[in-house]
Length: 286
Image (cartoon, helix red, strand yellow):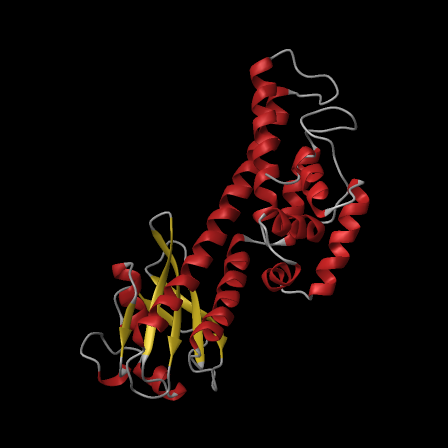
């Protein structure tokens, strides 16, 4: 999945969370276009029309453009009559029937890369609870995008180290420092993998780890757990109950139990605790 596609998925997920946590009927958002001073609304949730779809918002213009320019949340109680913003996009906003709107920038490494909006169809203050939840949704996107950047960087670094050092995992290179770098990269990849929600990217990370190990040698022994089994064990390691793990992963508690039983069997563990210990020894968990 391309980086932009991954970011769009995170925006889409955040809009669902934003509506669920705030009760707002409408949420939408999009990404800042690379190399340009504008963002484009690409994700809609709860809208009744397509008026906002693909709308290009220039930095500084309207509510979202103001949020991009200032790199901070902005809100208005009545969009069409507000004196706090410019009104280039009134037609699209009015067509959707929106009045109270909040816009929160998604900031990654000091750069605004997207905006999340939440809105009401009547003119009334949104309140601190709504604003706090909107900011939290944006922070979730930021964290997910940073993790993906780190994951890709570590994956590429690992492959580069293997190629440059000519490392044979069954026979460590004579260059001890190069081998130590590879071991450190492997440990970092293994620690980061369980935190990546995108299964395709997590699979790439684990595949990169596989370049550094062979049966009985290398920094860690490979264990054939599925990404979901690793996710469940990570929740268990964090002290989550089956119900809490199910909510976090978006599955049922019975499904969590099934993954846990399967992981325990693969690891030769009799208890949840033993499974976590075995997974850590194998380098599957930090």
